[in-house]
Amino acid sequence: MIKKILLVLSMVFAVSCELFEQVDEPTMKLWLNGEEIDVEAEYKQITTYGEEVEYFNDGDSTTYKKKILVIHFQKDAGRVELNKEHYAVVFTDWEGDATNGQPIDVASYVWPSVCPVCPRKCIHGAESKWVRMEIPGDGDVSISGTAHIDDITPIISANYDWVISGDGEGTFYNPFAEANMHGRIEFTNLRVSSNSEDSPYYNYGGR
Image 1 (cartoon, rainbow, N blue to C red):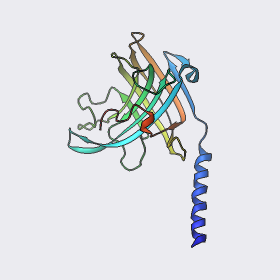
Image 2: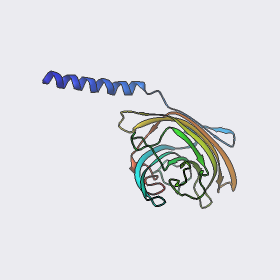
Image 3: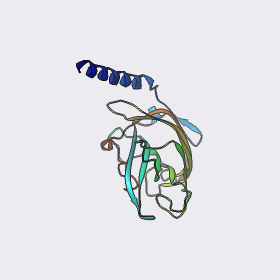
Image 4: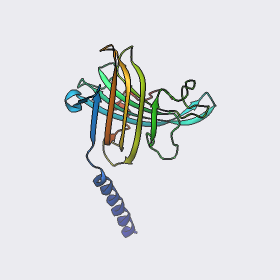
């Protein structure tokens, strides 16, 4: 019995080490109005957040999985809050895969939503996978966007739960500059956390 327990533990340890070793260093590039931004120099806080939750869709009286992925850039070094100057890319999926346990699914995401009527899961058969590029202020408006999640891999880490790769671009209104801006982001092996205490995006869009 002891030998069997030791064998199981050794297998678990081997798998854990393999997950650690397979994760390459993350890379991320960001452009605003065609100019590449040095994210490390421009922003003091760069955080991620992902979650999946069940919600009841009033449109067709059915329960679905809502999934989100947020990449948040904040200029202030203090606590991450939405009322501070920031830039964010937000993926929302109102019809997520209920079987894979991931915070977001490999898929294409768009904005505006394909269906102009349904605020969540579309009851007319259109996809409800959205991407928004956002900045704070009363005039915060996401105008258009397209994005892709290409790969999701679970990891064993004290601070993160997955590594995710993808890209996105879109147009949004900047209330500080009083002008529309175009943003583009590319990320590979981005570490993503599900710790709601570190993100103001917990319950984003409602449950």
